[in-house]
Amino acid sequence: MLRVMTGLALLLTAVPALADQVTTFTLSNGMQAVVIEDHRAPVVTHMVWYRAGSADEKRGKSGIAHFLEHLMFKGTEDVPQGAFSQTVEALGGYDNAFTSSDQTAYFQRLSADQLDQVMKMEADRMRNLILSEDDVKTEREVILEERAQRIDSSPEALFGEQMDAAQYLNHPYGTPTIGWRSEMEGLSRQDALDWYQLYYAPNNATLIVAGDVDPAQVKALAETYYGPLAPSDGIADRVRPQEPPQLAERRLSFSDPNISQAYVVRNYLAPERNSGAQEDAAALTFLAALLGGNPQTSLLPRALSFDQDIAVSAGASYDATSLDPTTFSVYVAPVPGASLRDAEAAMDKVIGDLLANGIEPAQFARLKTQLRADLIYRKDDVGDLAEDYGAALTSGLTIADVQAWPDVLQAVTEEDVLRVARTVLDRRHAVTGWAMPTGTEEVMQ
Image (tube, rainbow, N blue to C red; front, side, top):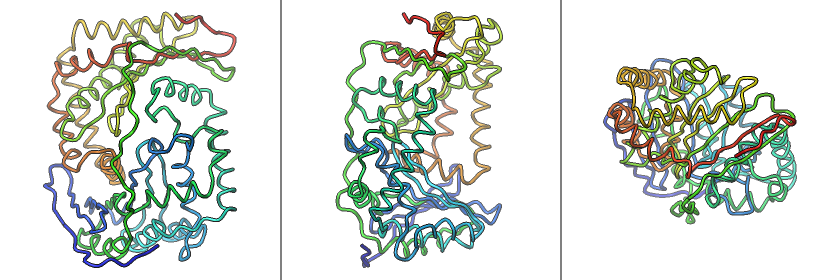
């Protein structure tokens, strides 16, 4: 399926270094590449991100994105089964892959002088994967066992699946990335090939190379190995089924004998980062840090674990980087003797007090300093930077958005945080779940 393409002229553009030394270019077959320079150590991270995740699957074929990720290690004519990872290990590096709702990524980290070899192998399997029926049968058993170990034997994971399914009635974020078991069992070789041939193409991929490299060198290598690959003619805009308006809170009660600690979790529908309009996501990032980012000083743990002694733990979280609307989460795990009902009421009081009374200026100033420090520390690991760019670029954002993010965060005001809090923290747009050990069930109101 290789095809030599002519006219491999590249658009090589130096992006203004607002935060990172970043260069980008685009191959004539549509593959975007990003080079992040970091010359502190002679190592490199090489990543290929495909704009295809579990939320892009057809109904009834859940798990195919993750299944294909496994099958990508089965080999090609030039790199036999098992040889890819063995070669990387022999070169002193390591490799892996992961699948999420919005993307699938493959990466290697190794000595910078071995970039040529891993780029050659990664480009080879982008279009030349060989799959036999035996490969598919064997790997299907592997992913079914992975589900058994990671999901079916974990009450917390099962509860999380139920929460997501209740949150997203129509959007595919309600389907687990690993897939529903009944659908995983039916995944076929043709299903895998259809997914592979459509999505695993240069015009649906982003190359990230980060570390001790020269952009011109990376450009030459990418032109050599990725440049000749034929694009897919089936790539279209990623338009997914959207959620109908949620008009009432949804509540779940879940019990399992293997739950050791009862807890309450609530997920609110929340906006994601959008290109050129990241302000609401930045304010929600502050809100998550304010409510639950620090187990000692944030509002929920401070009030519920220290002041009231009603919770073993409490917190909040928000992941801004997704293609479609995401969730903002809060949780509380009550101390022995405290009911889930009382714990939830105490959690709601903290949220209500915040909305009514506002934010302490001193605490807000500390948050700004902490978030700025976190971003600076993250730059110490070039692999983290590569992930930041890869996740963003496969979720509808641009390099300019990634580089503007620190400034957007620093521009957030107390009023911004309260505005998004009043909009997002609306229980009519939330799913609240109680998880309890079997035999200790409480009646949910």
